[in-house]
Amino acid sequence: MSTQDPRRGRLRTLLRHRDFRLLLAAQTLTMFGDVALVLVLGIWVKDLTDSNGAAGAVFLVYSVPAVIAPLAGPLIDRFPRRRIMIVNDLVTMGIALSLLLVQGKGDAWIIYIVAFLYGGVQIVFFAARSGLLVSMLPADQLPEANGLLESLRHGLRIVGPLAGAGLFALWGGGAVAVLDASVFAVSAGILSLIHPRDLDRPVHEGSMRGELTAGVRHILRTLDLRRVVFYTAAVLMVLGIVEVAVFALIEDGLGQEPEFLGVLSTVEGVGAIVGGLTAAALMARLGEVRMAAAALVGFGVAVGLNALATLEVVLPAAVLSGVFVAFYFVAYQTLLQRRTAVELQGRVFTASEAITTLPYSLSIGLGTLLVDIVDFRFLYLATAVACVIGGGLLYRVGAEHLPWAPTLAPTGTGALPVESLLADPGPPPGSPHDL
Image (cartoon, rainbow, N blue to C red; front, top):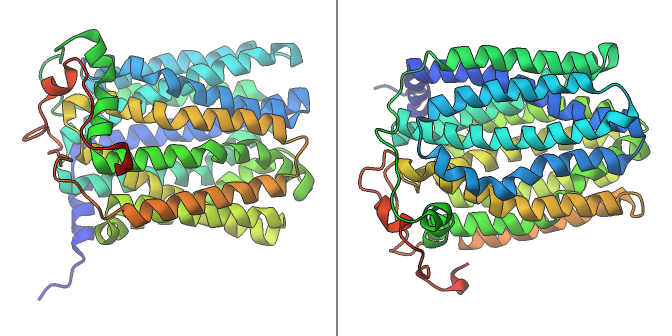
């Protein structure tokens, strides 16, 4: 009798999929460029201005495009996702090369513009990728695919941040910009070789208002999606503060230079590899909602440990953070894909980004104000409490399910008709107390 782990069998089947292998290769390149450049943007501003608040503001600007992302949702759902991803890679290449114009402190504003644009193109890319995966793979392979991609994304923090920080220390931010532009150019070429099943025809039904709000209304009408999205948004009202406080942790708590952020990100990547590769097995036991909730609690504990501000604690806490971040995003992404028809993937993804990013952006903004007047230890502890409470409440309600909350086939087969969501919006079913 065979004792083979069925999850390993699904992973091998997934890796035999030609188009997925090509997508994985392209993502390896672009994710490496992402983690190298985004980290360097904050370090670069810190180096130019010597201000923790100014450096943290880079991450605020980077997150702002998600608030207006729903405007791009109908576009993402109207054209083949592979084509959108290729064009997006080429645009990202041009954005990265514009950093070559930064010559001194007076040019710091260029870094903020690049951060804003970079945040926007990343949202478009990941929304298109979500739809492409749903078109490309059967439903039972989505957890493994999301886990592998998430493990890769965070796992590249082992080399990406060190490479970015190292290049920045040796030759400046321009060298990192050229590296980033190069990997996106190669990625666009790899994506051109993919020939997956995709949207057969443009989806253009109902009014413009109906198209723009279809993603939000789908989230409101789907109980488990609604709960995960809004509980997450509540937690993110404080979580963004630590994006800024990390510079104070490094400089004031650990006595290190800003480039040490690359080390922390690398260590976190080690945990993310483990989290991404084991997420599918854990999700089979807990389900998507409860796994997301448990990940929020675990991440809160890891964040709270940073208040001790010693290398002996902060480095293991970074590993734990990586594990739980990977758990969360695999659960979140899989839930979104399984509960959404392929024709709505772009609008639902961008709507969820807008709902969760607005409070996150506001909390980063609050962090830039608080980091110089409030001890960073208190900021870490407050964030930890919010994560634990929010995740605990979500876990408690995670098993509940209303009969009208549709479980959609990933290819759109048997899904809630797209036309019903593109029509003029009406009140969502259920009660606000369902949250």
